[in-house]
Length: 364
Image (cartoon, rainbow, N blue to C red; front, side, top):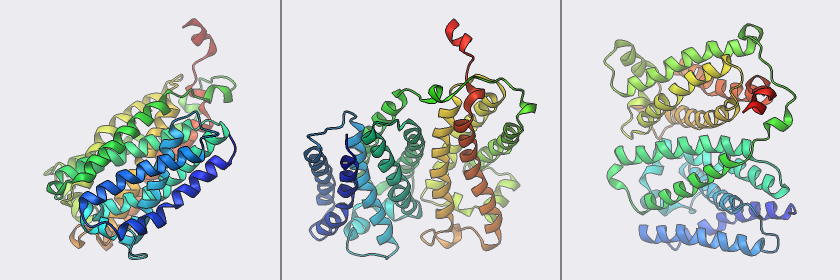
């Protein structure tokens, strides 16, 4: 397939700008907004099919990511209008259609989807266009999407806006259903790791100082994610109460997004750190590179949203990070976000330790 297909998707995504402006002036109620969102999806798919019908991509995810790229630009418009940088594009949507997006958490996921997810969609579309593998980028997106979807759906349902659920939750569930199907398709793609490797290695941890450093990091990381989970569960410990007051009062925000995010982190990242400890010490764990990709995507999304929402002006002042605690808060949370990225990079670029010897594979 020629590069024109990928370029066409990029141009198609930019059409969301005039379309949002046009429909914003025509929409009068939530039902019309819901119909607009559904019609936009149908229109995008029709345009994409017409543009590429002579050179139709064999991979159906091409069309899924084309639609997602369109709505990523819409989310970026939402974020910019929330900051009053632009006006008149999604005014009705912000005022009436979806109250959850006006929270600090909703604001941050708009930016994440409009920038990071948009870039990933374009990269995966480019890979499909050129016939390259996009499994690595896809797995990173899987982790980011799962964290975003779980926290947003549960937080919107149980938080203070839980009684304001409307038509858009149904549309969001459709988005999640299609995305879960896309996740399974990405996982089913063959790994390209074995084609890039020479042979497996089985060095002791004492001869792998970088891995030893990661093992040392995993222990406090596990303790930190469990600790924050206990904090949002209203642990009566003095440490938990002082930490909440001095460093992360946002954990008590009534929107419930930070509470759900910390619980998901404790239940997801906690077991991950234990499994990763095993994978770094025992050779032949071939699932390690893929697992670190998914987790690093999830934690990048979670920490970006949490850090920015904790400091954002849309968060009530009493729940923002106090000025005196900001240096510690930023240092701890940024390190907590960056270390999984470094571990993922190590596993992807030097995966020989995680390969099983060729003789073992032949025996099986």
